[in-house]
Length: 203
Image 1 (tube, rainbow, N blue to C red):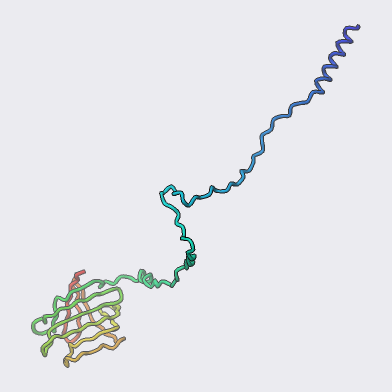
Image 2 (cartoon, helix red, strand yellow):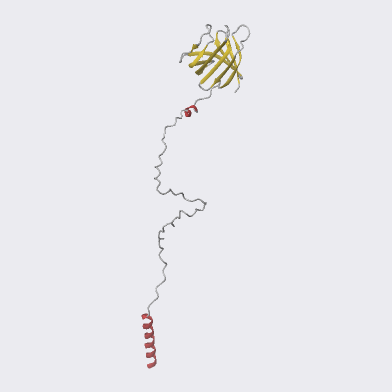
């Protein structure tokens, strides 16, 4: 009976010693540390940059440069945007005068050009005058088409092709109506009194 008692005492003593030993803590993941901000390395003005350029330095005693002012802004006129919605004219183009007749006799030798835009036209005519010399007529007009008629409003115009051969200034805002016909590239303007201007489109 003595031996079992000693064995029990030994087992109890070993358990007490094991319990009294310090336990190693369980390893834990380290907490992430925020990186500390670092100052950028100082730039050496005498050291060339990677592009081979040196930073310019103001000379000693130089006055500071004035501040740079913003350029002045002004509104930009864009009236041309409205023209995109203007429908094209069937007469639009550039024309050269091919014939000028008064209804009787041989055609008159004349030179002239007609430029027609979407809403405006410009006409320049030159022909021999009945009393000698040269007869001229030039005008810039706003126009609209009404059937086979050109309804024109004079913006500026002048000429000396009237019977008295004096220079006539067309009044601004005056209205003139001409009948016209177009066949292919040919455009005829009937100016009244049996006179016909026949143009051919060149552009």
